[in-house]
Length: 183
Image (cartoon, rainbow, N blue to C red; front, side, top):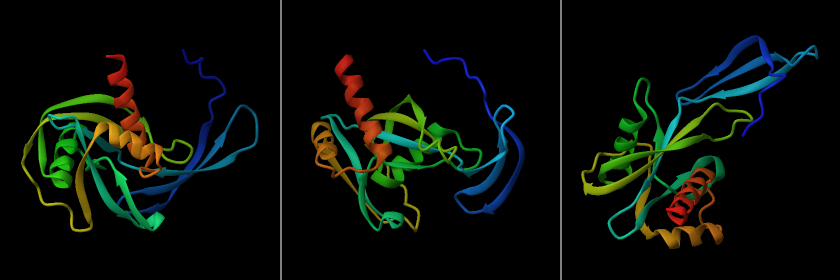
């Protein structure tokens, strides 16, 4: 059980220093107790969804996508950013259709997590998508990805072999494996 939160910082001043298409950056001056004010850099993100899409024979969908910040292709679970005013479940179905060409008949929320709370408020909603049926949507122009299906056990081995290095995908796959182990 988490301890009661004490000595929380409070913001005495905040200003946005960058407004972008996907993220904003703000500088917060915060004080903890009677200590000096400190500056915290915060990346504001609208939130995202992550999909564990399983077919009827226990294959999980992955996408192979070029990620410019790291300069190479990564294997990831299907995921995407929530549009302004969009519900996470609606975003999840849209993203799955865009990235894999499949729509889930069942979409089960599995909770979520903060991606990197040391500097960002991005929260990722995790969904289990099953009962998949073909129903493609055109992917966004800037997305160049390839969808593939691999057995869930092989996806877990890909983590061990460091072929899957995306933190959100690793978290999602390990949560699914743990859920399967205790059910």
